[in-house]
Length: 318
Image (tube, rainbow, N blue to C red; front, side, top):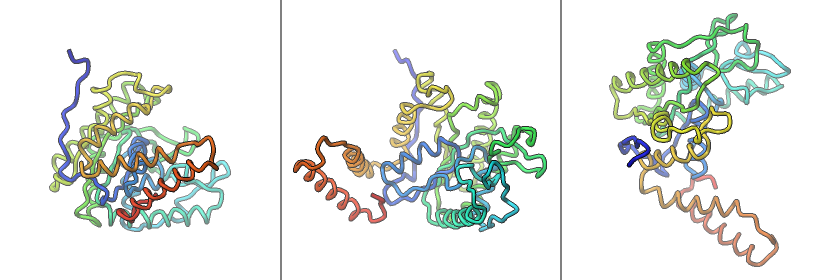
């Protein structure tokens, strides 16, 4: 008797390997998967402008990066002793306006280069609920703890999400027509929006995504990985959520990564991944005696392993 439903997954026609260059964008789940790539030492960029929860926020920053539409002082505002931009996450905010502006535009230039050279772009959509700043009449990526009365909450219509997704694809492929783009919907539960409202939001995202992917003229280059569905239908148990009952816990993230690895990463990379994993665990080892001959030999052998990896994969950051 089966007590779970396993979602059938197809192997990618364009699997990731150690020659791939990956860009991860979107919600905190994109960061979860991005950190897995980083742990296994794939060439990887994670959310250069911080976590972005909804399609228009992702679209706007991709457009700015691709077109090198630089940030200017009009894009900044001062609040709670820091300079912020409504287009980026608060983790980028700074106390020095000039330094903040310089950093934003430096990141913008680097992101454009990343899009030019990426083999795979991984985008996770978190929610279809957005906040519109009333004074600017603009949908924002982050409210930066400004009073709620300054915003109007809106649910993006499916058609608007679809247009945003098509714009994302068009902008990325305008600078890199061979890139492979993989979408997911985040399994994070946005319960502050409400239980019914969260499901409505996910439904809007899923419908718009599948419509966009199924109608893309380059459909082989655009795919969907069912991370949300894996949590809902394979795991389907609150024990796979953290204590806040909102975010998938590490067990769930590890399970989704396992399913991702099975279908999206080339089997030719597995041996290297195992080698990297062994080195990572060795680096985390805490010795009883750092001055012992045995430990010094351990460090020497470990360094030789790392040098061997670097020789085979010069771009690998060890």
